[in-house]
Length: 191
Image (cartoon, helix red, strand yellow):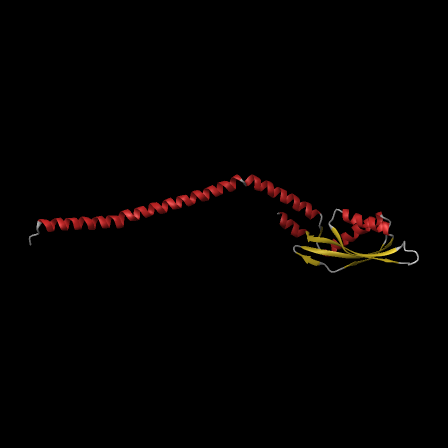
């Protein structure tokens, strides 16, 4: 079999075209794609690195803010009733109220612990107290409750006159509520 010069050129060009096609498809294109993937991966890592560097650079600010938050948290927790049980917290609150009443020469005629309500992590401890007094001492008593080191509120206040002819003496029935958090919960949050 004799191949003409023209057919040899055609076969050579075809073989070169096939070789070029194979080189392009199986060598050059995969190389370009791997280069692109490496470049994209590098760019993603650079962006991630920049984000981490930004976070690290802001660490001092975050630590400062965390210290402020912890300080405020400690100040707020200092205003809460603490104890191992709600009953002990109610007893401490009763002692506080008796001390305040004693400072204004008031006698608490009755004290009744009401059922508390859960509000988030806190438990409201309400005490219903009854006083026989005058309005001036009552207002001073209420002012001292407001100024107390613990956060106390008066959600209910009822004043009635004992003697209609001499309205100086009044019977004051009020609910004073404090907010309780278990000591263990405070320790866990501060850890």
